[in-house]
Image 1 (cartoon, rainbow, N blue to C red):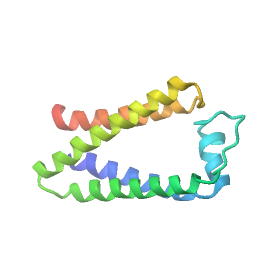
Image 2 (cartoon, rainbow, N blue to C red):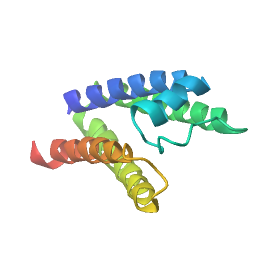
Image 3 (cartoon, helix red, strand yellow):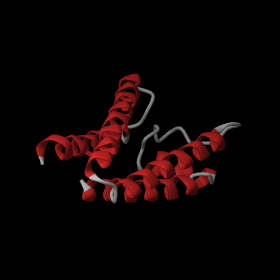
Length: 132
């Protein structure tokens, strides 16, 4: 459980750093369109009037996940288990959103990477809870 919580915490630190970089529209276009193809390659990403707000929201959310998971890696097992359960629930919600995005047809082929991330991280959490 400690390894899972630490890894999830570190991954969220990295995610927050990447998202922080995405406050720059050119970098965000690179992440979302040119490098990962999360959005169609023929549709350049722009922040628009509200994009930076949503990016900062995601930075704060990832930072919170990082902090809670890293702190929980040192908690008693009963308390840490609650955080793993919460992680699995949140990754399930993220996967539902990724499924909706994939089915909408409005996103690029890179959307499939999100399925690997959410199912992988959530599945690992389920394994930590019930398989270890």
